[in-house]
Length: 296
Image (cartoon, rainbow, N blue to C red; front, side):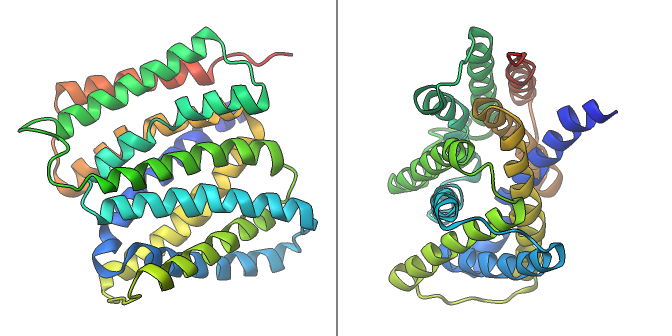
C-alpha cells in the first residue's frame, strides 16, 4: 500500500494539480496582466505559507542555502511562470505552450547528464522519446487541423515559451543539486519570495498593474494559490528529493494529455483517435522512465 502511494498516487496527484495551472491562467489573464497576476499570486501564497511555517516551527536554512533556493525560485517560478503567462497572454494557445514546455524532460535529462553526472539508460531515453511523440500527437490533433497550427499568434510569444522551458529545466536540476537539504516549507517560502521580487520589478517596469476583481478572477486566484502554488509545488519539491531529476521531469509528459481531458470537460473540446493514441504513447513513455531500476 505504501509503495502504491509513493509510486502512483502522489505522482498522479502532482500531474493533475500541475495541469490545472494552465486552466487557472486562462481564466485569470483576461482580468490582470501576467506579471501583476503572478505578483498577487505569490504574495497571497507567501502569506499562507508564513502562517504554516509559524505553526510548524519551521527551521530556516543558512544564507548560502537560502541563496541557492532563491536562484531555484527565479528559475522554476520566475522564468517558467512568467514565460508561460506571457505566451498565453500574447495569443499563443495554451496547448502549444504546453507542447513547448513539454520538451522539458529531454532538456532536463541532458542537463542532468552534464551537471549531475546522472546515468540515463537507453530504456529511459526511449521512454523520453515516446513521451515527446505522444505529446506531439495529442497537440497535432488539437491544433493541427484547419491550417497552420502557429497561425493567430505572434512569433515573439515563442520566445516567452522557450524562456519558460529553460527556466523549469535548469531549475529542476539546480534544485536537485543545491536545494534538497532545506525544509520544504522554508525552501518554498524563499523560492516564492525571490520570484515575488522578480514579478514586482517586472510588473512596475512593463505593465500598468490594473486589476479587474471579477468573481472569475477571484476563483481562479484561489485555486492557483491553494492548488498549484502550495499543493503542486510542495509535491514537486518532495518528488525531486526522492527521484533522479530526469525521472521527475518525465512526469511533465502527462500534463498535456491531462490538460486536454480537462479542456474536454470544461470547454467541450472533443478528443479524436489521434489524441487518444498520443495519450497512450505518452503514458507508455513515462512508465519506461519511472520504472527504471535505481542502482543499489
